[in-house]
Amino acid sequence: MSNALPGENIPIWGSYLRALRAAPILVKSLTSSAAMATAEYISQKSAGIEDKKRMKTFIMWGLFLGIPNHFWQQIIATYGPDPLKSIWNFLAILAIDHICWKVPILYIFVTYVTYRQSGKNATIADAWEHSKKINPSMQKASVVVWPTAQVLNFLIVPLPLRTLYMNVTLLFWTLYLAFKTRGTRNKKLNDKKKQK
Image (cartoon, rainbow, N blue to C red; front, side, top):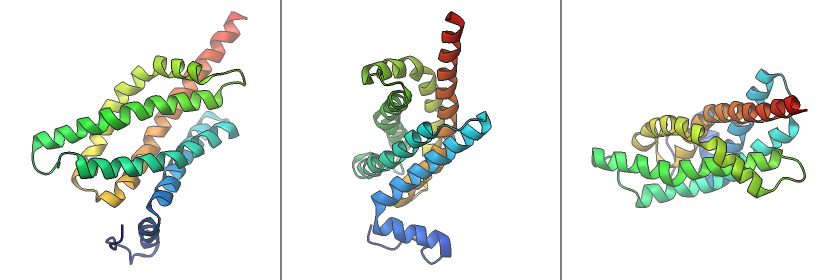
């Protein structure tokens, strides 16, 4: 990203844009992490809890997520169908994005959070099994949220800012996931207490 982005002369926004142009992957990772941390903070405050391990889990996921998301946006913009050429191209890019990015990343996210939040004897295989159990309902919500959000992303948002746009959407999506994964975990704990 060597060309100046529109708005670089606006005080705070311009600083972000200049940083994005200078170090796109780092800035995208930090904004992903900030979105994840903000969502988890809101989730924890609304639940009246403080879970530092879970907060670190979400922050680390955000730092990781910015990297593949940056490259995915580049790949789909370069090799995917041009959404502005026809309605079929537009629908195709929405489908490709959802199937190739959103579906797998959600399975990976739930596996990661489950593994990180589990006890010392937990395995990645256990976390994966848990992810497979709870993902269907999340995937149903995902198929409504993400293609809808991506309409603006693919039609209006310039490529360098697509990850930022996704991070803003991610903040709200992460709130949903935080409540969903916490709810599943709390249900398991309650079920265990009832069995005792």
